[in-house]
Image (cartoon, rainbow, N blue to C red):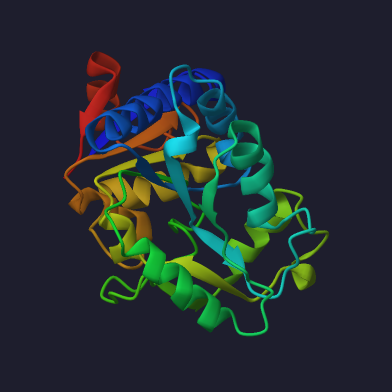
Length: 260
């Protein structure tokens, strides 16, 4: 796994979008289509804005899968990840093949099983992720389930995760944040051929330190990315601020560091 650090969110987003667009174009060239997993959150805005402007991508050959969604939240709610995915990626690019997680379906479990069947039809070329303030990937809050092979799981959100959603202004107070969500499982995320995580902002610094300097552990869910042979984590100087001096020095000298 590689860590890369940039001075600001704009340069981080541009660099991450360059890697992502290269992966998508390569997949289309090699097997006629690209299958991606897309994350949507405040931290992804600059990256997705740059990606949707990337040249030379035939978006008609891209199929997108959804990473996570709240249980019981309508698609019209500002905090709906389906809404964000449509607005930030799908509508802008015209991706014709996409799979949204219907968190407000009468039987979310049945709907998710149908999407899981589609997901299993072929490998995912690249997965786009964020990392939460509590270290989560998707909605795999600590202690995350590192063992399940189920593609999507229904999870109970911890308080730190729910408070983050309030802090990002999607909800007026924590009582309005759903307590459950659909999440792609950690093992399913690791099945992607390539993983790209975009993690800016000071509020992510403690999670970055815990996940990339501590043990690989369910209590630091994003630490599992260190098991993937082709994962890159994009940080800015704020999210990287608490990393140890040795790693900080290596990052300054080489603009990236390998973490295992």
